[in-house]
Image (cartoon, rainbow, N blue to C red; front, top):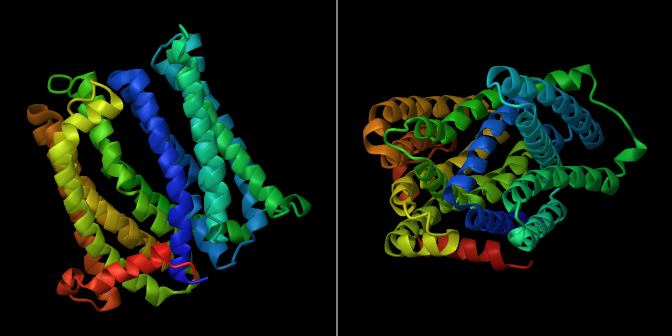
Length: 435
């Protein structure tokens, strides 16, 4: 299978899954409004930090070592299941202690947080582990079909439950439980499809050492990335003089709308990482990144124009009247989102070559910009400042990564902007060529 064909398969099936994620976002936003949906996205942001630490970013190591067949896929599958069970027990203890003893919440509310944290963290953990194992086998169809169908089922459940008196609690519970179901079904599908149940084994000491050595460097980078992309949520949340709960919901929605434009880069990165790690198609990967930079630049320019012209009408029509302040933050964010779109590809490229430290250092520079900028400007200018500062930070991160890419691939700055018809022919061939 050619590299372009791999990208095509990834686009089709991961695209299907991300469309269902968008539908879930729309349905949640319409039924829960800005403050309710904002609370869900804010609390999952908190859980995502726990998830990141609990995973040790081993999904990066999984991709690297399973793609070059260094560690058996069966060993990694069983290791994932056992690790997730251990994380569930640790989450039970830590989250329960935090909300009961430190926050002094009631036992019933604490139990709700425990349910939400375990279902979300363990569900996403299993999804992360097993999707990368599927992708390392160039199987984009099965995992995304499973997750997409469950998302559609969640949307249907929310609509059916809309007339219920206790609708809010039902929707929130269902949202988190579906996360866990997705992870469990992915794990079962991988074990059954690959017949891993016939050969139970775990990585040996040397393999675990290799896995952790690679993954912990990736964890450092991902932790910094996490704060670069999410710390503005906390600044907005706790600057109550300049930001209301509705502002938080609008800002997170703007961020999520920007992240939708990252779907295609993330899909492509899932194909770039394994191929770079295995050494296959490395020349094709380098050229593809250049072409995609130029195509993304055009796409994001068009996106900014569309948002400027139609945003105010579109977002209130789709999500509800409470989302009436999404447009300006999104316009301010979009140049930075373009930076992330290219950075996603470059990060996959450097990770596949074992140069994860470049990702870490670039993210550290961006984090410094975000923290200083948010401290200075958010108290006075609110969510508009948060969006503008984040965009600047993302572009700083991109500039650092591009500098290293130029050195690695012997490029000049002007080659990035060498637009030609061949770029569009490449995209057409990748999307529609059935050979």
